[in-house]
Image (cartoon, rainbow, N blue to C red; front, side):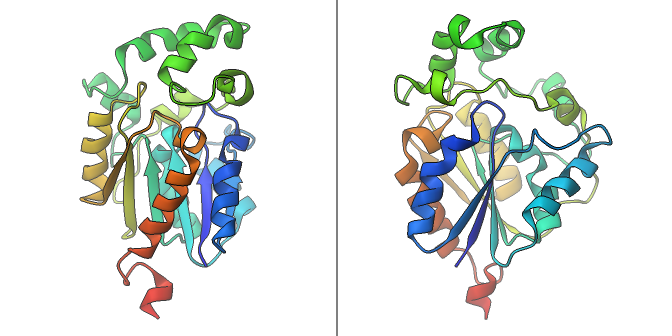
Length: 244
């Protein structure tokens, strides 16, 4: 039995992962959904990750799953949880010795241009669900049910700038199985960047699925089957159950 820990992205409500949680539970695995905006970040990123890890606890055969911005901190949290694997879903990827802002300003073509240009206006709006429903549907939820913006989008309380400014520590990618799930129809984070960045961290361990940015909403069964397959096919040296 595996224990999946899902670290949510910044733009969707944690409940959007409940269908996936149920599907994994039916397989006999356990799954917890972690919102990470509700811990204190005033003492820094590492302090916040300690708080998240303390809330989760160390469980055998933990598979840490990160969506979108969560990917930037996934390896550090995986170390604290002693996870056996990391799975990135349309996720931003850290680079040792650099902050995410460093990489954006160096010219990496990460985000869709229209998404970037419209995001700050979205953040300033007092009622984004009304003023930016079409924008959110186009960039995040184009393959999701029609009411997804009103039912599933949240205005993030994460300290995004603090996370983007955080320089990833030198020498902190511990040996661990890593897999990247590329959302091939993503309109916020370029799929081609997902592929390039994913290969830099995960090597050839990648899968492309035909979804937009939020497959947990649009195709939860496809995503559940994929996660189960990824874990089942992990090399024995990473999968402690198979190694025994």
